[in-house]
Length: 146
Ligand code: RB5
Image (cartoon, rainbow, N blue to C red; front, top):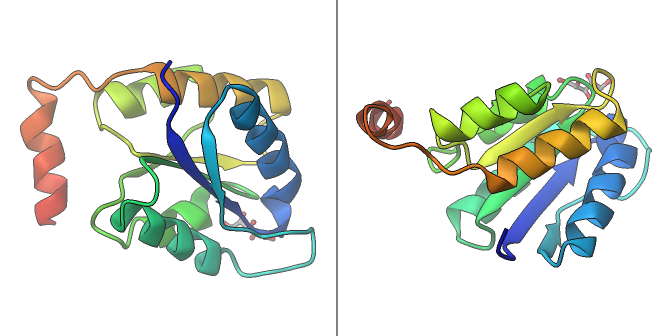
């Protein structure tokens, strides 16, 4: 896997898992844009989903990783930005299909739902799996027109 610039963000519920994944990414040689949060003090997940979405939109990072309690709220926030295709993933299979079929550029995880080993698997698969293109390409293009 070639080194990429990856933005990462979480709310308080996702902070510990964000830090774990950040260390994993740095260890693999990626450049990290950490958009917070910086502690387990309670914050609002839309602020962090939006910050990451802007980083993707503005080309500051090629991919994004989001973490909140479920992955759902923070993905909803990020997906309001048209440049973002954020997928909530729960396991290696959902991470793989989010890349192969949906060309997801952001992965969202629920820290209250998946453990660190599953999260590491999701991250590795999300970064290593290419988009299949083909019949999926016009469907993904339609997302930008929604
Ligand atoms: C925070 O308690 C929790 O609601 C948030 O992390 C997330 O799960 C929302 O979707």
